[in-house]
Image 1 (cartoon, one colour):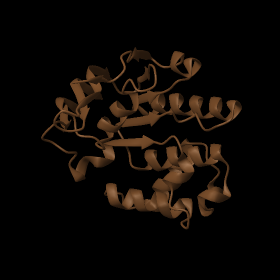
Image 2 (cartoon, helix red, strand yellow):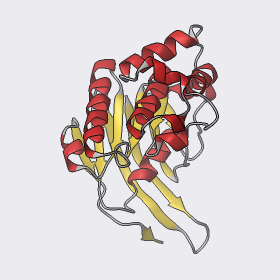
Image 3 (cartoon, one colour):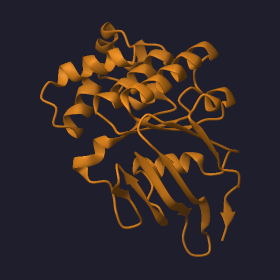
Image 4 (spheres, helix red, strand yellow):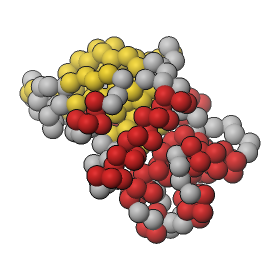
Length: 222
C-alpha cells in the first residue's frame, strides 16, 4: 500500500524557488493501479521520483504499508528499499550496457533483498513479466525496446516490491508493443497484489487503471 499525505516538492533556493509539485495526497492499496495524468510540467514525474526516494519532499509524508517511507527528514531505509521499485521510460539506458540482463537483475536482487536463490528469483520474475528466459543472457543493446521494458519489469518484480512506479513506461514503444506492456503491468499489479503508480500521457492506458488523478497546474514560482 502506498499513501502520500500533502507531499510537495520545490526546486531552487532563495529567490529562485519554484514549486515542482503542489501538495498532493493519494492512496493506492495492494492490487490497485492509479494513473497520474496532466499537462507537461505539472509535477507527474516529480511525484514518481519522490515516491522512489529520488527527490526529497519539501513537505508532507509518504508511507508504504503503513510505515514512514519518505519525508523532508527521512530517506528510505536500505533494508526496505526493495519495497518500492521503478519501471523507467527508457529501459535500455537503465541497464549497464556491457552486462547481460541476467547479471543486472541478479545484482539488484542481491543488493536489495535477502533472497538466497537469486537465479531462481530472476527466472520466476522473467516468467511473470513474460520475458523469454533465453533473453536474460543478452545485453540490453541486443534486444528490442519492448523486450527491454519487460526486462525492466522483471528486475522490479524480482526485488519483491509492494509498490511499482512506472513513469511513461510505454512512451518509447510502438503502439502494439505499448499495449502489450501496459496490459502486462496492469495484470501483474492485480495478480501479485502490488500497488501500481502510473505516470502516463496515454488516455487509453489511464482508463484501464483502477483510478485516475489529474495534476492540472503548472509549476508556480514563489
